Each structure stands twice: as structure tokens, then as C-alpha cells.
Image 1 (cartoon, helix red, strand yellow):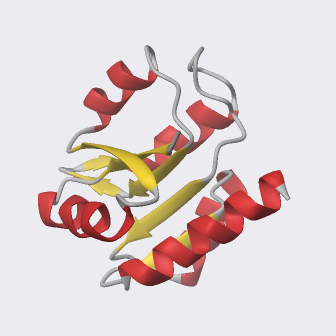
Image 2 (tube, rainbow, N blue to C red; image 1 turned 180 degrees about the vertical axis):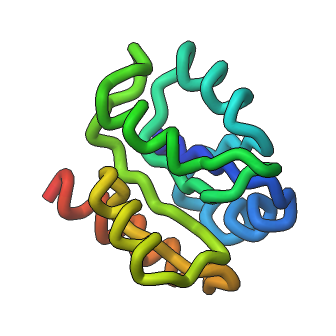
Length: 127
């Protein structure tokens, strides 16, 4: 059974690009808003999260500590979290990694790089 990868990004084109490139390896669910993800995560297990930082004026970054602190009953607090952002500041990258993100990719990104990074994270977890 494929691992469930959830994308939270307010740009549908980003989710579509990821889905086109990673759907052979992962079962993919995507959400445009943080509230949609929260509702889903309260009822479903997921294996990994790809998260945009800027979601229609809301910060996606606030989801990282929610997951890491075990706020979602069915979501393992140790799931891989990869941040995708147009924000390229070293400070923002460090903040996200310190909050518990496993990786940080700057948009525009190569979906094959995301695929390779996800594979690497999972191999470390289960290797």
C-alpha cells in the first residue's frame, strides 16, 4: 500500500505538479487551506506532509508544532514534514527546521528533487 502524502498549498498548480511527479509512489491528498487540513488530520492518518508557509494570508508554519506535539490523534507526531516556500531567507529556513520540519525547499522547486528527498527521509526512518 502506498504511503499517504498530504500537500497543503494555496496554489493548486503546485499540488498538481507534485501529484504528477509523485503519484506513482504515494497516495496524494491536497488541501488549499490550513482549516481543511486540520479537519482531515483529525480523522485520518497520514505518512508525510508537504507544507507551504503562506496560505492565503495564514501561516502554514503553525501546523508544524501542532503535529510535533501530537495534536492530531491519528497522525504520528514523527511524520516527515517538508516545507515548500517562496521565502528564501536563511532565518526562515532555520526557524522551520527548529520548529520540527525535516526539510525546506524553495519555490520554484524541481519535483524530482522533492521526490528524492522524500525517498531519503523515508529510507532513514525505516532503514
